[in-house]
Image (tube, rainbow, N blue to C red):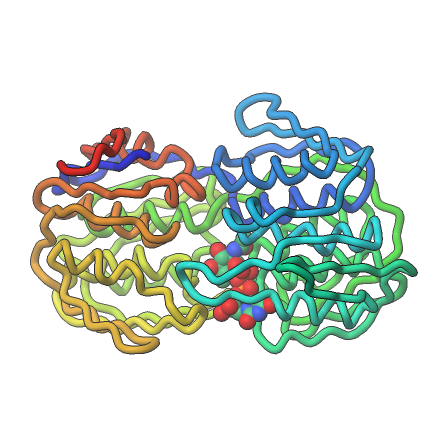
Length: 423
Ligand code: UD1
C-alpha cells in the first residue's frame, strides 16, 4: 500500500493539464454495451475506476484495448455474459451502470446489489424502480439484482423521487433501447449526463432535453459504434483550484471547462481568489488568507458534493467561521476527524459542519476514507506546517490521475512512498 507524503507551506505556481472526467468516462464505457461495434475513446483518464469498468466489460466479452495514452478502444461485437460480480461492484458502485444498456440490448442483466459505502447508504432503488416502469422484471436473489425484459422494454414516464446522476444515466441508456417514448422527470442535469446524451445521439439515439430536468428519449432507433472524446474532469479542476486557493498560489489549468464549475468559481471568488477564464482554461490566484464562506451542496448546477471536502480544507485556514451544509449524501464528513488531527477547528452536527478558521494547520498522519476526502487531505497538507502523511491512497488512485506528479510540477513538495506503517 502507498502513502503520500507532503511537506507543506510551498506556494504553487505553474500550469496543470486537466484529465478527462472519470464520471463521464464510466457511463460512456457502459454505453458501449448497447450495440455491437468498435468504439474509440480519447481523453480517457488513467484511473483505477476506469480499469475496473474495462475489466467488467471484458468479463462480458468485450475486447478492450488501451491503444496509447488516453486512447481506448472497446469492441462489443460479441457479448457472452451479462453479470457484474460482487467483487467488481464492491470496488466500484458505478458498475451498476451496465444494467440499463444490458437490459436494452439483451433483455437481461444480473448485478450484485451495491452495499453501503463510506459516504452513506447509497441505494439504487430509483434505478430499479425506473427499469420496472419500462416493463422490466426485477428480482433480488442472493445479493444480486436479476433484471429481465424478455419481450423488450417499453417507453414510459419515469419520475425520480430524488435527483440521481447514475440513475438518470442508467435509465437514459435503457430507454434508448425501449420501444416508444420515455420521459425522465426530475432528471439530473450534470454535465456528465449531457455528455452521455450527446454520445448516445451520435450513436443514432434520439434524446432531447439533456441538461434540463426533463429528458425525452424516443427509443428503438438503430445504434452504431462511435468515436468520442471524454469531457474534462470538473472535480479534478476544482481540486487544483482549491490547492491554489489554500497555498496563496497561482495556477493555470488547461484543457478544462470553466462553464461546468460556476458554483465552485463563485465560492472561491468569495473566499478572495482572483479567477480569469477562457473557454477551455482558467487561472486562479489564491488570497493571502481565505475569507470564510457558507456552502450548501446540491445537484448541478449548485455546489457539487464532490467538491465539499476540498472546499472545507481551504476554509479550515479562513479568517472567520464558515458553515457547510451537505445536502446530497447523509454521511459525507469522514474527512472532518482527519482534518481535526491537522489542527482544524470543525464542529460537525447532522448535515452541517461549522468550520472556525485557524491561522495554520500542522502536518500529521491522516487516513484517506474515500475519494474526495483523500483529495481534501492533500489540499490541507499543501498548506500545513511540517509533514503530512496521507495513508490509504488507493482511494485517491480511483479518481485522480498522477496527482502527486501534477502537484510536484507546480512546486509542491510531495512524494508517493510505500507505506510501511510507523513513521
Ligand atoms: C454520482 C457521482 C458521484 C457524485 C454523485 C452526486 C458517478 C459515477 N458518481 O454518484 O461522484 O458524488 O453523483 O453528485 O457519476 N439515491 C437514492 N436512490 C437511488 C439513487 C440515489 O436514494 O436509487 C440517493 C443517494 O443515496 C444520494 C442521492 O440520491 O443521497 C444522490 O445520489 P446519486 O446522484 O445517485 O449519486 P451517484 O449517481 O451514485
